[in-house]
Image (cartoon, rainbow, N blue to C red; front, side, top):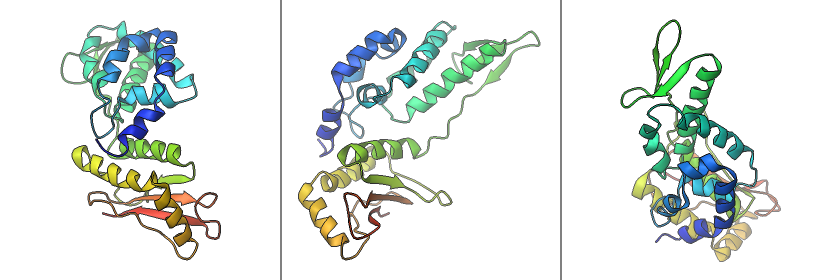
Length: 241
């Protein structure tokens, strides 16, 4: 198991998850606890995308919205065909699901009669003028992975930030390569001896790089001044490609 897996598990509050699954019944039906727990041993995330959010996010507002959207979505024909989006552990699948739910609700509010499709586009919307198809596309690329890394870093030390140059291609690896990258990163970040040494080194010269496997492009991790380098603006930890 990778070095960061235990850190992921320690941050997920299963009591909070059970309470939320009870308070938000449509989320509870879509994401039963037994299904969420199945992914605790699976790299690279070591959790399902909803177990992380249900078990770590402090604000209930996203779940109030999700529960209402799921209530409507589940009432439409062929809802079971969206099961793959519910059962995948991929961190970015949350945004794909949320967008599909929002699109279906939007067409309902505009007077349409949406239904899920068994194949092809995501939705068929019937209207008085005739039906049309809808494909709900979400530009995930590496942004979902970057969000996961950023949330882990914030829990390791609130001073950490993950950024990329928005004008250049941004890519993080997937699968085994991502697990190896995360393992190398969090072996450093979670090692207090290493971070103490890095902070001392950064007081003299920075950035202080973290050596990681190849496979990423245009991604930078840094710790802000407050906990990293009192005498310098930032201590930069760069993911090198």
